[in-house]
Image (cartoon, rainbow, N blue to C red; front, top):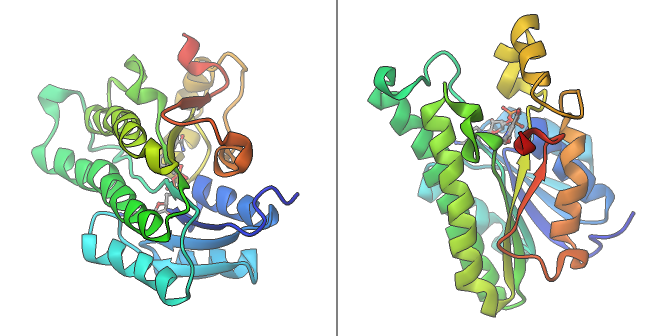
Length: 252
Ligand SMILES: NC(=O)c1ccc[n+]([C@@H]2O[C@H](COP(=O)([O-])OP(=O)(O)OC[C@H]3O[C@@H](n4cnc5c(N)ncnc54)[C@H](O)[C@@H]3O)[C@@H](O)[C@H]2O)c1
């Protein structure tokens, strides 16, 4: 369990859910981890739960000064990020809707966080990695909704996730010559606080699980292994890739 020994990782949205599971696993694999989240309390309790290897940083990915400040915190410690997981995101259940009914404010809020926020995270991750000159691994959290019709009732969310998939490929191509790798992980329906609207509705939950060939919901822990692979030297030749860990959902 030391595949990330000596590495420093920053994970956004790591106060809870998938980001927390990934950050905790990175720490168990020997990395120093920065728990970046806009929720200060969640970030501190996550860092406390992980222990000495973790630091909390308040970071709102949709606000550039806040993103810059979080990366500045790393620099002030004399650390540079070897791995950045741009994972934070929102899905505005009850507001996101088929296009004809979608309010512009909901569209903008989703784009600001999911797409612009991911871009800002990548931008400042790249700057820190380029300054250090030692390459790096950037991992984005995508979604099946950005790949097929799975997200037809979630126009804004699905569009931002498709945007993230494209962003990863473009940035991967642009920075491969500096040995900065950029990949996207696509989890399926994963039972975190993001999806309580579905989890708490037995009919909706059964319907979505029915669309997962492996026949169960995902857990945050299901995403850890692929993230460790992409963050570690095992993934040294992987860039621009889209890695589905979705119980087969995107095969349908
Ligand atoms: N849960 C799923 O079914 C599922 C499926 C596919 C993809 N995803 C993606 O996985 C990622 C993590 O989702 P999750 O299920 O763990 O969600 P979650 O709601 O459990 O956790 C998301 C975390 O991101 C933080 N966050 C939200 N907006 C932020 C911002 N502007 N700046 C910084 N932090 C912010 C929240 O405070 C929270 O701690 C998201 O990008 C989501 O779209 C989730």
